[in-house]
Length: 95
Length: 491
Image (cartoon, rainbow over all chains, first blue to last red; front, side, top):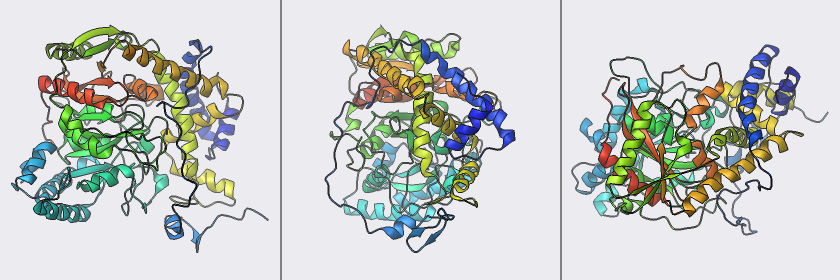
């Protein structure tokens, strides 16, 4: 499988990465090189094989249903580029 | 005083305990070495004031007789580990001037045991790379050069700063992370020892995430014993990482010098690649001969799905990366580019904040997870991963204790030499290491010799899950036979 220019633009939008028109051919070439490389997986017989979900055989641990952290709003917004009080600022979303 | 930087960690521990020198003297010697080696670009942030304060505290504890196992030992920290109050960037522009308000579990355990932080080390952006050339702070120089050449070589990656700093005697050991070979490949390129422990052995909490089902932290050090000492402090269960395993951490140092007599060492025939340099081939047989001389038994084994590990990795890792890196949105931390609306804010921020390699992987990951392609790519890759793991399980079920392979297909190469035209050329660096991450196993790289141009080469030992001790015992045999290698200083 390989991707065309329209697919590159669509993937970029899904990934929320702005891509200019003159970057598209270059990206298309690189993505197709990667897709050509992974193509060899299609020759492996995976009939009846379970997909891996956990690399170490272990029971998923469950946390206690208790509050064990919090009241650190200052810390949480400390690195934000734009805030007002304890709120993150973003461009207007709802008209 | 500069002699202090050439001690191993074990030697420094003894010197500190015997009061031959203080941690402050040891730390100052390293801070001077770092200053004199800025051309290597191994450190992206030096923290001399904090280092001296930590050294004084360690000296106080040593004097009182309540020193931890790493008391007063100066270390470098890969910039992927969150360090409280000290800028942490993963060497990406998108994290900008991020200053964590918390400490990663692994580093907090090193400080708990008395270690001293010298600063933050360079790495490939978000650990995506095999040469440390994708860092937003620029490439790192390898302290090793080809005989008679002035060309600066890469130290490998992604933990290139860690490997370069340890090899150049700028720190006694360093933290590193390994998703597809990022500890073992740079260790092999710099004649240092690097171990990627079993998945789940070290907590991932507070480490900038790349591919969560593959990422593991581990040390890079100048000897097998030093690596064992560091891993003991770094490892351990952490309730904050649900994939960290709740089993006791053994005294890894006790495994050093233990007899390897009667151990069964697998030599996988699939690792004998077409066109493999004769030097690598020779190194591999030499390593096998050393283990045999120490009483181990060599057996040929087969890992039939080896050739599919790298392509499966380049689906699984980018898929997980695209999901993990969704958090860089220009809203909560890091870089933010101006925009008219929220979608443009995300798109512009991520376009200017991510480097080319990261964008490429996020986009591939987005594609293989997108509607209509998930089964063909991601699901198939996860099935292949099951088969890769089964190859190793079958091998261990036959009584094999560890597997010996080359660490890398070549020695270090020059900056800008690889991957310019085709990204896959760079990816092939990890051909011998990536299988280990796919199967969640422990792997150690130990220096074993030099190529014809005088560059270091390493061997890799792969172990059973949670049997790092066997790797330390076998690694020590190789180190004793091959000796240790130090680069001639040119910086």
